[in-house]
Length: 166
Ligand code: S3P
Image (cartoon, rainbow, N blue to C red; front, top):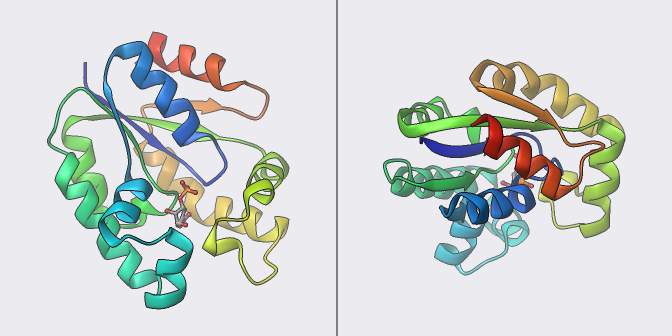
């Protein structure tokens, strides 16, 4: 089976669902945000604050290039990872792309709980989430092999669906 690559906006459950999928498939789980944090020694929010988004995007691209050719992986990508066509190309080589979606209200509620998303700083709100969905939606859908709406699914159910369909 191909690598399972989870794509979609923040708050759709990529990391939480990805961990369970990896456990069920006996695959290794990696989260590109976590890789970037480990390499830089900084939380994502701090990378954005200190060095800006461009630096974050190059660290993200580097992380993706390190794992894209491995096998038996479940890869949770950051919500903006597909902005880079090269990232898509690399991950597609061995990846089955699962797009997780959710209603903007659900996403907003989930991400507000944590307050660790730099893109939501400076008072950005539900309207911003809707805008992001609109901007990125076509790119996500174009790449997706499977689409799962997690708005009303719990983590275990979403993971089961992926394992049965992938
Ligand atoms: C981002 C999403 C975040 C993280 C960074 C940028 C984005 O990942 O990579 O804050 O551009 O949408 P999650 O989707 O895991 O929150």
